[in-house]
Image (cartoon, rainbow, N blue to C red):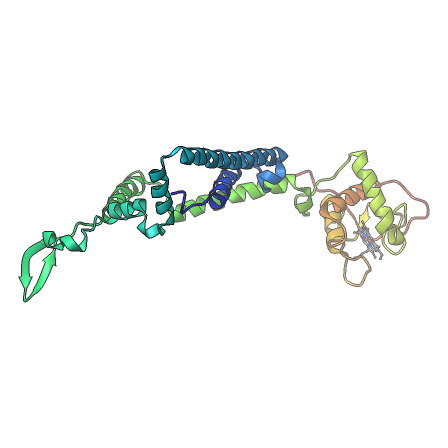
Length: 295
Ligand code: HEC
């Protein structure tokens, strides 16, 4: 056995089996456990060192045992070491167990009394590997029959449908808590001064050139009055900033430049300016916007 799987194969294989098991059993979300939890790296390192240590101990023990053997045993072992794999005793043994073939010298013992014009029939054993696979199939079939036909477990189609339904719920849940995926349907007005301060900075950097620092209006309309060209309220304002104004009017879409979260903040900031009455405002544009009764 040691001969076919040398230590430099055995150690990595066992190591990666343990590694795989750890990744499988530790729920680390979308990142690998060994990245998320540094402790896992430490454990893996210890496991690796342990595996190497075990190999070294076994090797040393083998050496000692070998030294203690009488000369003829040593010679026998050495001869066995030299044998190619296919000739080694355990390999022959294994093949014999799997196939139960009768050596060709003893073929006569299998001969049946059937002789058709000189064509003779041998009564070979069914190879055990085949017989056991067959039994395994029968067991599988029985379990399958009971599970799917009698107890009515989900088939693939049903499983897929359930997974899709579950995924939909998870996406809805995710959208709720992921402000960066906000759209005008889910946006809410922020009132927290910290958020408004960020909105103010964004406004002063990107928007003041056209709307004036106090939002009283210049190229772009006054954003502090009750009149709105494209509709007031957080949802419409969010929509305007995200998608831009009417073609050719100068209000571009900020979709790529600002994140939805930033647009939410600057829109909330604009809403907080309502009625701030800046000096020399631009004449009102558009309709007076009345917020619909709270939905
Ligand atoms: C290049 C000049 C310019 C810049 C920069 C600009 N806007 Fe505008 N904005 C306009 C114009 C012009 C309009 C009118 C659009 C229309 O009539 O369709 C407008 C309209 C708007 C409206 C709708 C007003 C209404 O009455 O419906 C909002 C809200 C708005 N801008 C917010 C912003 C925000 C927030 C920024 C910065 C992220 C910004 N704008 C940057 C020129 C600009």
